[in-house]
Image: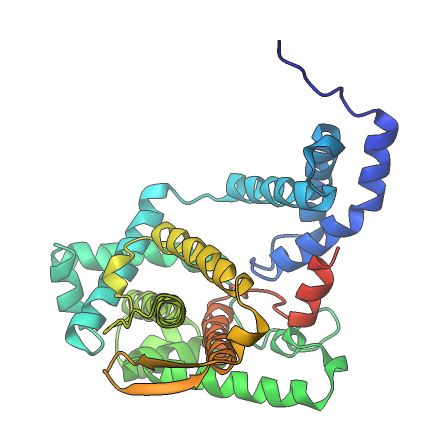
Length: 360
């Protein structure tokens, strides 16, 4: 005989909703930072509250799960479902952009340089005309991106300046300067013409026609080159994420299993974002389990290992783990810059905020 839990009373449901409205606002705020400016915060909150009401109606204390953890996924799911309904682009177009990005990343790895357009077209089995048409189609996906890093908010302050809380003190000023320096370095890796186009479009606020007049090409060609430059930046971001994952996995194997990889993970192992996300979740579970098993004595022991180049080294274990965290922080900052430049900020990744949100 199947036994079901009785439904929650309306009074219990309403109490849960009223005491967790702040959770909806926090999730909406973090999600909004990664979305185009035309998506209203109030719309996200409204949809999120509906998800919260649904979660409160389904929640049972006997589940043994805190309500905020149970509700978080349903609130986020409601917001994401609403955003998907607003997405006008067909799946085939988004698949085309993924194919373009992965092709550029693969060629960059194989050639050890930025690929030329004819090389990209050949790798995608396209004629020059088909490749040109594909770039025009992919360009339309970028219409929703935030156009300027230095666009102003309601109070007139540049949006880039709002990425860091001014109340954090002078270290925030230093961090902002470092972020701008790293962004300039990432853009500096692009071919000169594409770098010039992005600078004129985003920094100088020139139109496609004006840029074309400066560099001597037609407006549609400028649009194509801009789309190509953004694809290269997305590829660089993907490579950075794979590098973070590969480094963390390699260090765990050295410390836990005394296995010494001779190379990090290859970009070709992750043809889709979903494959990267799945492997990342798997590695995170393995690393968490390993760290949870360590004692104070184990953390203070010295370990011997070999690098991917075969060089032998020795360090205290907790020093090694601190290095892994520090390396990941640096790489994630660089990835965050690339996302922000593309109008898709990862939002607030402040560590103290994380501790507050997860402390219960």
